[in-house]
Length: 130
Image (cartoon, rainbow, N blue to C red; front, side, top):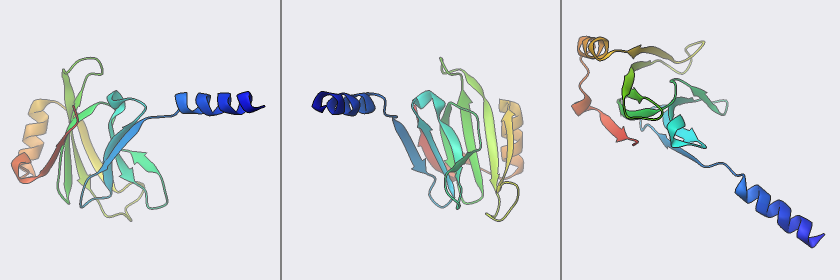
């Protein structure tokens, strides 16, 4: 019986999930992953509990302020850039979700939209994940 209990404990330790989440200060959003860093996404911290995914996986750079989040997405196996996101943060009471996502954008679309919104990465908080 003792061996069975020890075996169950060892098995549960070997199959546990690894994860990372960092809240984007001043917002109800976070950036993080479960199991693999390659699965990094931007998520909304739902006040009712849990997270709602906002982007697809492999987010590498994130800039943000209280109104917008700018993010770069790369290929899973390389550092090749797939595109960019611009996320407008809406009030938490907005339904169905409290954000408006633009993207996946090309570099040209991203810079045009970013500039038209008057956003500058140098004036925003930043996190580099890889």
